[in-house]
Image 1 (cartoon, rainbow, N blue to C red):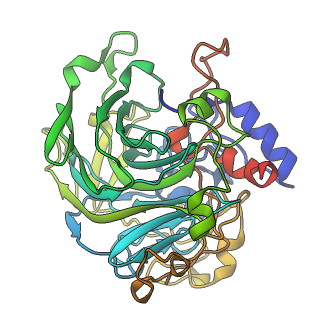
Image 2 (image 1 turned 90 degrees about the vertical axis):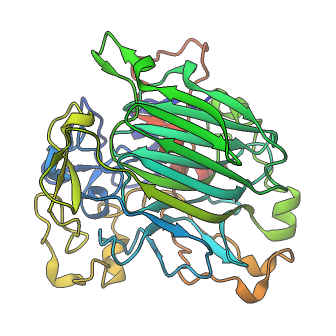
Length: 442
């Protein structure tokens, strides 16, 4: 069972109990105000990084409040010798030519692999591609984390919450969970599990081959599921519930099993996270290991509105395949004060390279989504005797990171809670609720 959703009202209430000033919340029925026009992936309004990856144009003040999204770029990441190609989200301003990935939490490298870590009192690590994919094939060689309540994910996620998943619950190392969502709408029938040998001990190759008409999930080169667009017609909504909008590849490790989460989430995750587990005692953190990652871009769909070759934008709140336009518009904000409608705001305090020039810009919760909750001490790979200390690096250490979470507080299916408004945040859509309450829960 996929992690469920939490109500906007509950999210706002919990934020109010932890922080002094709450960012306005947002959803498709509640747009952001003009002074904080961008609706982040956390369901909060702001400027700066709120307007970059994850900014939902359908919930923002206007469609163009979000900065244009960088177009797809095919690339293979054979080894991860350092983190020079990964910028923390407190520095990234939209220049995908300067960094292929953006992170929150504590990524590390060791022996040519990328480590996603999750130490006690943190909410894990997220690494996201800065170039969006509008159909393509993504492949990852990885070993998952282990332990109840601990989830590793390899997913495609769009700004309007179209989603295609590989998820791995650490309590069951013999299963890979495939799933998909359209515009964040919950459908319990979408999940399908695939058998696989010990996902912690054994490296496997997981693949999502995403086409306009079909999506195929594979393990070690063998197809385990095929989804046809034609099978997803929604007569009520008069559209296909098929992932169809530009998406980022996201690699993550997150704690679904927190006491602050709903019972349904905890049950799905196999129970509460054991913060005194073998991995915590031995290494100081849970970890997932990513080896080679490959991104292959496909041509835009037939009939696509192509007006350039730099970025993607939306032309209608319907947020379907035919409302995406490829433009020549810049993707780079001048500062953390800028927005999609004022890309040069605060330019005197920023770098022309699209990287924040001053750390002070990254201190504002109005500029960095999720900055209100969580801490990010992620441990050190050097403390793990199984890792090669000579090649373990942390050049982008983000010890005061934003408190990313892919976990969410939710209600179990069949528990009697209303599903009508449980559309705002999904567990795999980085529920900031966990980031807010994690310091209280631990």
